[in-house]
Image 1 (cartoon, rainbow, N blue to C red):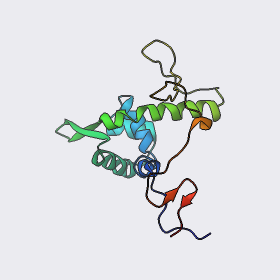
Image 2: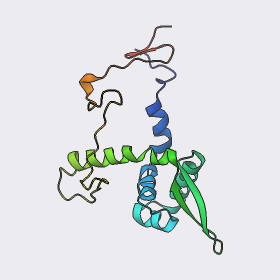
Image 3: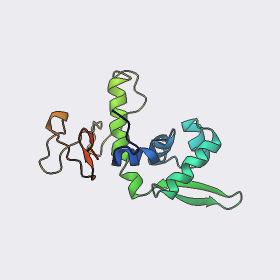
Image 4: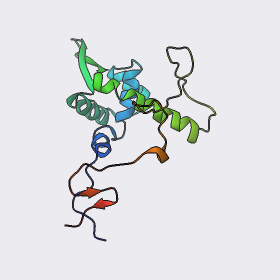
Length: 156
């Protein structure tokens, strides 16, 4: 089967084009933790300064972070999450939980996150309508993009 010129239209691919670049989600992690100053980000992420500056600029342009000056001389900025950035925090928590369980096998965990209820956060994705946890076997995809089915593009 020949490869199609255009890949499947997909919001996951669109989101990854923005936040899937190396260091982008780590920037968001740090900013959500309150570490929004450039030197804090460099130290805590370990990204080269030029690459970090590029990621920050892109995340600000995309409306995921805001940039605010905290010093005029020398001119320095800090970054904070916007509402769109905060909406990605549950994604970060879900990735953290997956990494804790599958990569670290529950040992030597580098950070715990406590929920406002006082218990350690264990994120669970649930259906908004029924409240049940989301499981693969309970999902059915219905492609909405013209010319696409679940298995791929329709014949021309």
